[in-house]
Amino acid sequence: MISMKKARRALLGRSLKPVRIACINYAEETISGRMMSQLTAALQKCYDKHFLPVWGYPVDLYVTKRPKPTDWQLVYFDDASHEGLLGRHELTHRGQPISKIFVKALGEEPVSVAASHELFEMVLDPMANLWADKNRNTQYAYEVCDAVEEDSFRVGGFEMSNFVYPSWFEPFEHPSGTKFDHKGTLKEPFSMTEGGYVIKKVNGRRVIKQFGSPEKRRRFAMEDRRGHRSEFRDPRGVHHPGRRAAKRRG
Image (spheres, rainbow, N blue to C red):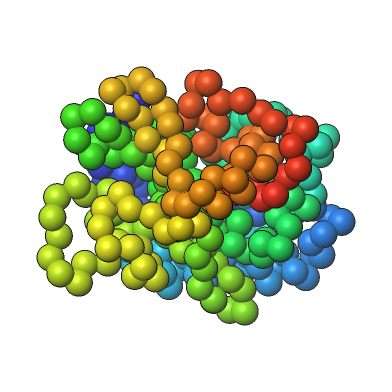
């Protein structure tokens, strides 16, 4: 477990040299080479224009099938049964961070929304182990898209995931007009939209999920959670491969 204080030190201590992220397409039934190039360019544009000025960690995205050993990875699969998928691992076999998108499971959700969600969250918390202290008894997972995950904005012809700002993780009172998310929807720290959810740790042990609405809870329960970031945070996390896969994101 890493607290908000330690999380801040970890983030501030990270090198500002761009992290190279290899974008790898194994979803060859659903994503063409041309679309992969256009999507990666749009993700880079979105990141540089909207995410980087807020969070300050540059990345360099590029399409390849042969990543370098030190590269992080953003990998697209048709579904979770792909033979190259190594179960519930959040690291490559070389020990580098990895995020996965399962395209067929997205339903009507644009792949760009899922990809930007995974990208943003991987960059801010690559090991999925950072927590923000709300008070002595409650911590919130350092996930920057979950609270607003069904909201999006458009960049370069692609829909991109909304994300929260650093102020969202700060439990004190903020001046009027403070933004807590990119679209300006939320009005206070640790809040969420009706289509969002949050992961909380209570009394240092119990990990629970809280949802923005009953409808969101029902949609969430129908998801195939294999390989999902939220499962890494909860030692009791259980896969549900038999459920209908509604959406797949980090």
